[in-house]
Length: 324
Figure 1 (cartoon, rainbow, N blue to C red):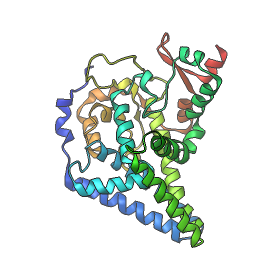
Figure 2: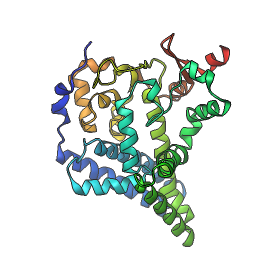
Figure 3: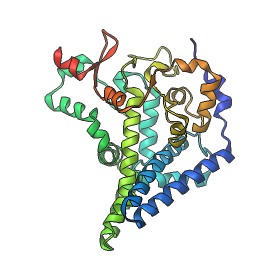
């Protein structure tokens, strides 16, 4: 079944500014208010607010992601400044995210290019010719503990420190992120507010980073994924077989900004997140997208995947690799 062209989807890439303003206002208000309540309250209620703040931050990141793609307040100068600041707060500097994520979009589904802006995917021959240190690094990057520590590994190191050390001039906003968070921590220590800082900022960011790391991994690493060596033609979008559709209730799609409609987003990145369900409804062709029910068992099944076998045209698990 042939997928719709970008021209077919162009009407859906039109932003409803009023709807965008509502989405931004609600999400930003929820994020700030739950962070403040988590910092000010004590006991179980405070940690409930911390959890809600983590979920709200995850949704705020989706809005940030759409803005950088030009799908959300693409022309508003105030929005550029706001989301630049939010990128600093969420340890996702705009300069780094734009560079790495653009690369990811242009090369989604190509296993050789998965090392930048995504989780790496090696082939069996590459694994065999790699050193022990390279294998251990690859294994760690694709391990669920890496996602659990995502705020420090995926974001702190991957999105801030590594780009800053490689290209300090190009990614000076990464330096701003380091200084900002160091200053906030120093302030918290100076006024004996380490607990409120943990509940109101550190843990919400850690929860959002964990959720984001897991979802980003399983969107392109799942049992039936099909990778390619190269695109069939210049400008050809990634096939839906290399992105998963998260099959969960409507309320979960709403809470996490329709992040589950990932194959549609890769087909036309300028479609605002709140219009993705319209595309899913109006173009049944997208329903051939591989579906993933994000249960703990299914998610762990994704993390068991190890290497791409070009002969079998499927991912091998770590167990199969050890048995080979």
